[in-house]
Length: 218
Image 1 (tube, one colour):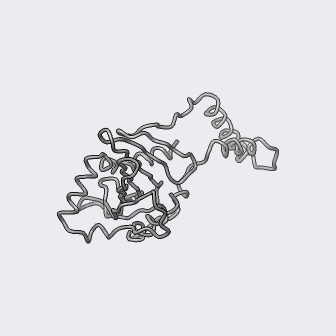
Image 2 (cartoon, one colour):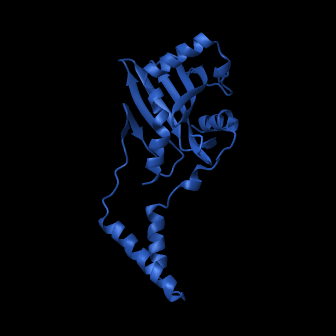
Image 3 (tube, helix red, strand yellow):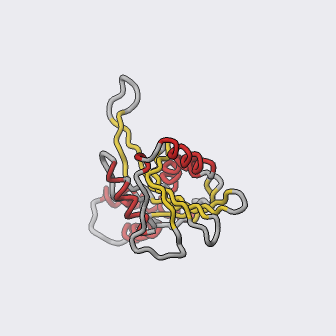
């Protein structure tokens, strides 16, 4: 997985005009940090009456949410795939099947980049931010058969293939060949590979950025 993240960041994110390399910058506070803040808010310090009142209100709100808000149950599925989330981690794993013999495993990074695009409309000013995530799609037909892997970029409205290659896990290769640039391949071959991937479901994962955004708000 570490190889995948390094390759994805080097191959995909570097091509964006503007990137946001640290996905943890937008991560919200965890329950543990809220509890720590609660303890801090109740300790005796020399604060102005205004700050004391603000801290008291925040402490009461945090205590209420902790005691009465229903606990969130993380999603265990997305579309036709099961989800193995890793809270606090930078990636997650999704698994699915195609037919009776093919196993599909998708390793997904959290947000690892973004691009800025003009807002639509003639009278619109400013820019919109499109968040980016990287996917490694692994399609296996069982023991003894090489696996086909797709290195992809997921945007809110589309999924782009960057690399495609075969991987034999029965043989250890120090520097495996990561395949040619997908955009430089023959047009007919590109279409065949896109159709192959679309039939197995991962193309629907172009909406993953929105899903991960909601996941990070919990």
